[in-house]
Structures are given as C-alpha cells and as structure tokens.
Image 1: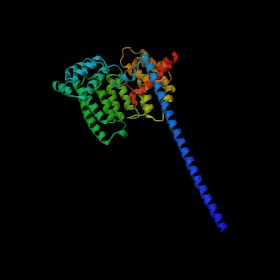
Image 2: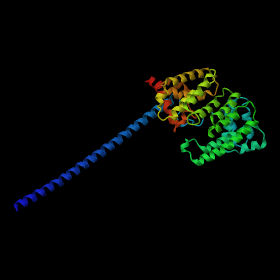
Image 3: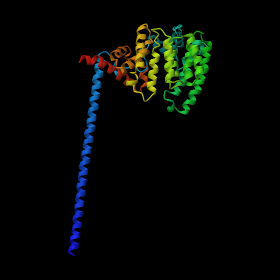
Image 4: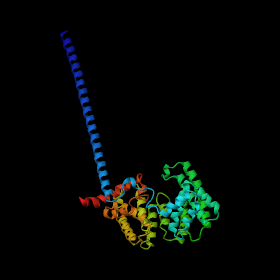
Length: 389
C-alpha cells in the first residue's frame, strides 16, 4: 500500500511539474511573441522613418533642381516633345470650332516640306478623332481635295489604332483585334485612295500607310515596296525613318539585328546634320525595352552604344539650330548620356528638352514623369549641386 501511494504521489508530482512546465513554456512563448511583435513594430517604424527621410531627401533635391531653373514635376507636359507652335494651336482651335478652311490653309502652308506636312496632317487627323464634323464638312465642300483625302485617311488609321490600344498583343482581346483589323482594312482603302489623288511628289500619303503596314503585318517584301515609294520621293525624311524603325523592331515584324542594320544603313548614307543618327539610338532603346534580362546601366554603357551616342552628338552639332527635328534626338541623348554616367553632357540636353516629355524614351515607362525626373535630377545633382557643396 505504501508503495502504491509513493508511486501515485510520484505520478501526481510529475503531472504537476509537467503542467507547471507547460505554463512556463506558454509564458515564454507569449513573451517571445510579444518580443517578435515589438521587433516587427520597430522594424515597421524604422522602414516608415527611412521612407520619410527618402521622400524628404527627394523633395529637397527636387526643390534644389527647380531652383536652378528646371521645370517642377507638376508642370511637365507629357503630351508633347516640345512647345506646340502657335500656328498649330490656332489651326486646331479653328477646326474644332467648325472652321475646316483654317485646317486646309494650315496644311497648305507646309508647302513641299514633307516633314512639316507629315506633322500637320497628323495633328489635324488627331483632332478629327475627337470630332470629325469639320472634316466631313471639308470633304463635302471639296470632294476631290487631295489634302482632305489625306487627312481623312490618316484619321481612319488613328481610329483603328485607338481601338487596338497600346498594350502588348498578349494583353489585347480577340474582339479588339477583330475590330482593329476590320477598321484598318477600311483605312487602308482610304490611304490608297489618297495616294491616287495626291501630288506624285508627296511622300506623306505613303508615310500614312506605314501604320497600316504595321497593324496588318505586311511581309518584308511588301514593306520594302512601300519604303521604296517613300524614299524615292524623300530619301532623308526623319519621321519616315523613325516610323520604319517600329516595323523593323523585334516587337513587330523584325528583329534587333534587322532594326540596327536598317538604322546603320540610313546613317551611312546621311550627311552630318541630317539627324539620322537618331535611328541607331532608337534601335538600342527598343532592344533594352523589349528584353527583360537587359540592365540599362550595363547595356547602354557598351562600346557600340557609346560610339553611336558620340556620332549622334557630332550630327546634332552640325544640324541647323532652328531644325525642330533635333528635339527628338535630344530626348534620347539625354537618357543614354545619363546611363553612361556622362552627366554634364546629359544636363546640356535636359536644358533643351526640359518641360516637355511627350517623347521616347520617357513615354515607354509606366510613369513617364518618374523616369524623366529620376534621370534629370540625378544628372543635375551630380553635375551642379554636388559641385556647390
């Protein structure tokens, strides 16, 4: 009996010890949980303070950059690469009020300047996407007017691309594609009609077809035929070449190699100041944008890219200071010079383009202002602000 009581007592004592140990473990676990929660809270506070300090630092840097005469974030124009000419603003205001004759006069004033005609046609066609009543009136008043036919054709192309959207193909619905192709085939007929009635020397009706070729995926042989029509009329038209760069890009009907080959061939046949050195830079930007495994800081620092940038700077220096096309080259140069750690040279380009960032490469980013400000403010800080310190 005594032995039994001893065994029972031992078991009760062990149970009590086990329960006490359990309570002790629970208390330790609770303390450990409290500690972890405290550490997590402290970590969150530290991260919040770090982000606040970062934001404060960026705000101070931005204010310092603006104090040097650069444009503040809220004033950046993301729609245009440069200030809009006064005559364009006036012409677009007139047509939107129903005055189609102002639009006709605006286009006629471009004369035989293919580059200027292209941009004026595109501006009028874009205005008609919003409201084409004035264009319909123009066509009714002058049924055989080649200028009206040209604007109508480009407008039809733009409407089709508006339906398609700017997303990658994998993010575009089958319904969108069906309607896009239907509208684009209609636009193609309008473009061919505009080509028939146009001045035989005018390259612009064939430039309008470049966007059709892109959307309807012209095979290379057919695109080459279209390209011959353009360069026969205007061998050095920069906008025609930049349009062609899209066709030859890997994301459309070409490859990185074909795009760069097209660009280099164009540069080889150009004289200094004709600004075709923009094309190889576009090829490199397209490649870096397309290939997810490329890092901008190493890809754009490669010897061949640096050489292309150097050639573009020489070309730019030889160009007419009044050549409005130079702004497109300056935008890309500012970006590439920044990535090549040539900050002083980048700042020189930023001074020319600042305020208007509706251009490649800025609009290739989800947040164009963020991309632009990161590059501009860094280059300005390294070049100007740190020198002051």
